[in-house]
Length: 398
Image (tube, rainbow, N blue to C red; front, top):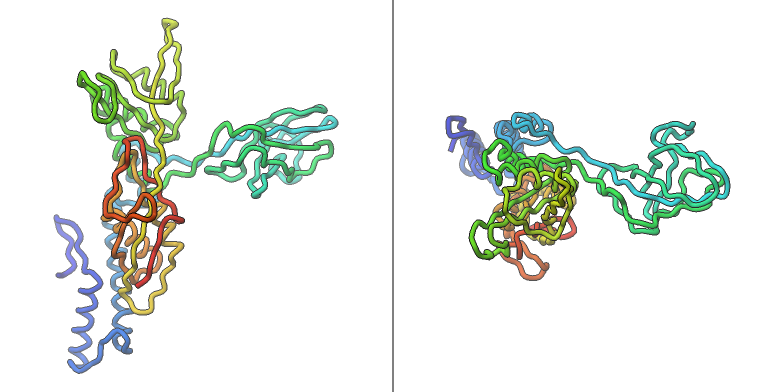
């Protein structure tokens, strides 16, 4: 099959076709008696050349597919989703209240820089694992114990147990103790990954639709911090198989402010329809009545993955940690999605190519407990979401 680019798209040769072409070319030069086995010198040269050709063809294929927002990556994906008025969600910082105990009046520099700070960062403390937190607002404290808000130095999801932020990194005479006696006010979020951004773009096109159901879902997906959302409706007179009461909706949202979500429900929910959900937010209406918005947050369900790598180029060394990290970052499941091996295979193959190439994933299986392995898994309830982590990915090289 030749490489073609036509109205049906770009079609490129696979590694076996390229290898066969090179073997035929070598035999046309040196004769049919030439040894092209993988362990022979000529066979190894053919393997190196075939991999170089495949790398070039796959690079051209990635350029071609990058015009589709469902396949684009990085900054190119940012440009593609902008057509739908979508922008990538940036990372946010964890905000953590920390009690500061002093035995005299002290001046502490914050991120606002009101006080002279030789380190240029602000008063900083850290937990037992070295996570650093910086005072947000510069302040003057008298003797006693006062709680002040600190911001994590590192952007993203930084969550620490209570009672572990006890070490001042910035030494100030008069500060005798620091401690996080309560949980964080706001848990930071990592920057939206390519896979998450693609999924949100696919869902958010409902923003321009008519009808309250799709309009509500589109508005929820457009909220700051929301990474995923699904909305179900039961328009019948009886509770349905998913446990949704009659004439009610069930909204499940990952990320975002509960108040923002509640306000969208209040402004867009159909009159008279009920709501299902364990998260409740009260809103005082213009007529001084209380509207209680209900929705749910998704529950994470651990997904175990295992597969073998079949070597296609002799001598290839696979960087398993990089492949696992690629899978963790790019295999993203929506709320209520099922897990099946074809999607895992596609992402695993892309991870192998991005790492070093020279192999393909085979014998792919998934599990919810790490012991029973299957080709397909559904979540138990629609508010669950499969979670992928490198620690639960097992790779065997054949």
